[in-house]
Length: 163
Length: 112
Image (cartoon, rainbow over all chains, first blue to last red; front, side):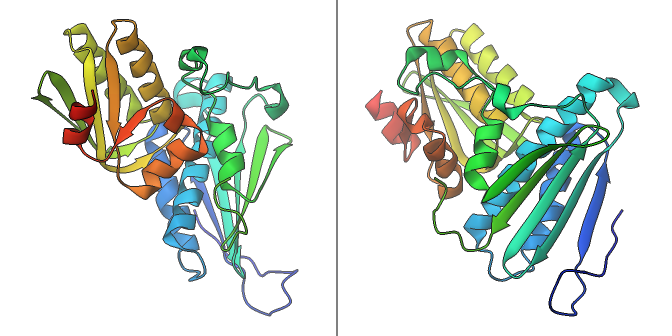
């Protein structure tokens, strides 16, 4: 489930460790995905506990979306796995979540009513993508040959905090 | 999956103490417990998130749904949250403006 690759773009000769996890598309694997990614990134001492919390939540949200996409495309046990890839170098963590779902257009998300509007209480979902955007330093939603790739970048030291 | 739910009563409020991890795997149990409380006639609910180690958007959604449910019965739902990692999620999503968030169950009950 894990493998290493020689980094080709790194100026240093250090091995760039890529952790790749293939996980069944089931909600009960989320805790494992959080544990593995946060465990890997915590090896870089530049990442504070607070930043690891951000990472843990964003990864969990992205995996949740991937699992749901997968389950929509192929319900039940026939759903193919999702893939989580993560690597860390020089104070930056990159995490990709791959699914084989039906694709996703983040621009199609309707915004919630303002929090002060009583109608806000009609919306229980739809906070996952906004949270990913708030917690990561960069996020891209890329169509792949088989579904969607969510690629997130986390800087250990970000200029702004959570906003 | 690690989710702990413990119900008690305090001055007419139902207090639901939540512990562990709330995500899409465990949130259905939290939702069911809150619906059960409302169906049993508890419309004044304190949800104590003090022992929550992880909360995601699904958990936030369950709490929003529960707040709406008690409000339709003229009730209220207050939160107890002191952990900065959990508070931050309410802050960055703006939900601190939706929920009354207190530092202790005593404070939540007194404010209600």
